[in-house]
Image (cartoon, rainbow, N blue to C red):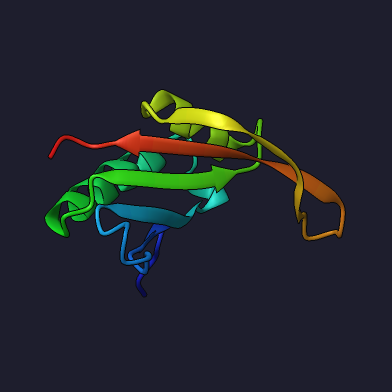
Length: 106
């Protein structure tokens, strides 16, 4: 039986005037596997893949204060700001989002 510990998605469907950019769409690390460096390894691999595809500017958004937020800060991403009431938690409560970007070496 195969097990997965984490996954990350790179969004490449950008407008014609942004061929250098990609979106980090979703990153998930299984709760039982957190704290083992899996998120950091996924982030490093997605950066390699982005460069391979000619994308050197990455953007993402995440809930402020959550695990992903701390991971992105540690991984060298720059926070641009907070958008209030951006999305809903699964229970229906509104949540803010933090917008991040990272320029990769070309």
